[in-house]
Every structure is written in C-alpha cells, then in structure tokens.
Length: 107
Image (tube, rainbow, N blue to C red; front, side, top):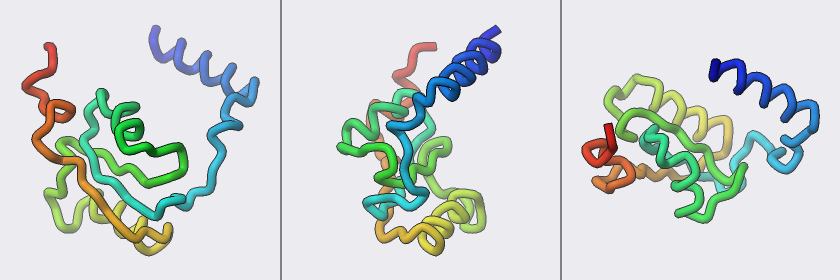
C-alpha cells in the first residue's frame, strides 16, 4: 500500500536525519507570500522557476490559486503571513499558463 511505503520512507528519512539540509526558521527569508495553484506539476517547478530555496517564502496553495472568499482560509493564511511572519509582499501565480491549466492535463 502506498501509504505504508510513504511512512516507511519517512521513518528512515528521520532516523538518518536527512532533514538537516532543509532546516530553516518559520520566518521567510525574503518576506514574501505566494498564492499559487495546488497543481502537482508546480511542486518543484514554481520554486525552480523563481529561484527560490527552502525557507525563502511562504507558499499558499489552493485550487486555481485564487481568493474566492474574503473571510476564507486564503485570507487567514495571508493575514498570518502579514502579522506573524513579517510578510511584505504577495504574489499570485494564478495566471492562464499551461502549468495551471487543467485542460492540458492527461486524464
């Protein structure tokens, strides 16, 4: 079962302290929050395309990378970034690109 494989890998990852190179503060180095699509193709693509490393920015993901409710979870996450984490800028990657266009995805 896939979840068993994931959990076994995680146990080994932690036992071997492979997390050490990823240690960082909860405060984003670049003081930026990015709202983006939760599309799986963006997991590594977005940071690579923007030259970002672990700890540089807060990435908030949802379907479509859009704010649909002024009192919803996206706004709450952005408020946390502003108030608690020292955010100074925001950016949304929700543009009509192939990376977020599900019509091009294979089914």
